[in-house]
Amino acid sequence: MTDPAGAPPSFPTFGSLDDGRATLVAARTTPTALWNDSADPAELIRAIDHGAVGATCNPVIALTTIRGNPGMWGPRLARLANENPHASENTIGWLAIEQMSIDAAKLLEPVFHAHHGRNGRLSVQTDPRLHRSTDALVAQAQHFDSLAPNIIVKIPATQAGIEAMRQATYLGISINATVSFSVAQAVAVAEAVEESLLRREAEGLDTTTMGPVCTIMGGRLDDWIKESAVRDRVLIDPGYFEWAGVAALKKAYHLLRERGLRTRILSAAFRNHLQWSELLGGDLVVSPPFDWQLRINENHLSPEARIDVPVDPAIVGALHERCPEFRKAYDEDGMTVEEFEEFGASRRTMRQFLQASAELDSLVRDLLVPEPGS
Image (cartoon, rainbow, N blue to C red):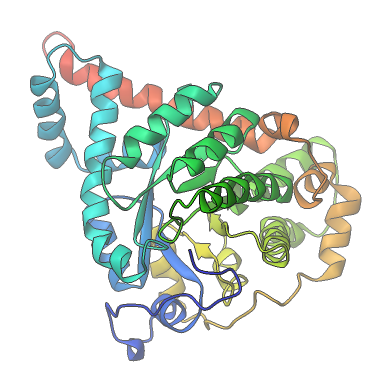
């Protein structure tokens, strides 16, 4: 692995720096890596041309991709069903996710080799229905890791999930913490991963091509802080809420760097461009949906290094004083490990992932057992 204080590897060129695309300029001139928040192959090819060096998949993304491309995925699901005549609808749905992930991973292999494993990875999320079982999460992580050399496995940053990350990292699997919104979660994840990296190194096992990251879903944190403020009848400058996720991301980034922890922060769940522009210059990952990349470029945003520019203390102070849920997310001791899965944003996100899994089952069911007369 690259030393946390060292320079990342040079980037292969997929486009010209003089074409005005801010995302490409930032990806090629700063340590900040751009990943695409989708594994849709057609979209990913375009995102790579905009500077993307990684991508992600989860039940929501997979469901959206399959629904949005029925001409491609209808026949593929039918073929998977025919090839696996005794498989459940759940199994067929996850086989489709695996196929989608393998396809996307192949597109990223040149970047993976150029970056020696630190980038060029495709994130595959573990089944959210396994979120209570460390053993089940580790077993699925091992399976996903075998699909392609450049897979990184997403595991929820809950008590069971963090223990799964500890075990998976020791097994040589690169992890991406998800269902993560807080500084406390980022620190807990990074410490668990570092413990296993050091253990591997002490035993003479390789860590040089591993690339662990910890997502902070900044936009989803913003959503939750806004909702909790309405619930608690809190009135502050409404623009302040747009900075909650950015504040947590910046604080987590600096804490992990100061402590020499090798897990990189990843900014996801975009709600505004600050979740890209305010993090540039940091040795971290930003993972916007492709449409956000297009919007950033269409608006000619300036790719300036702002990771070391603090969020206005007045904004952080008001959020911290008036919004208890922000304190939970921003303070390093804002939550215990046991409380991570009880956090409002965690519950809401896990429920959305579970619902997407159920809807994917339903989509496969309609293929296997169509309505009479359809």
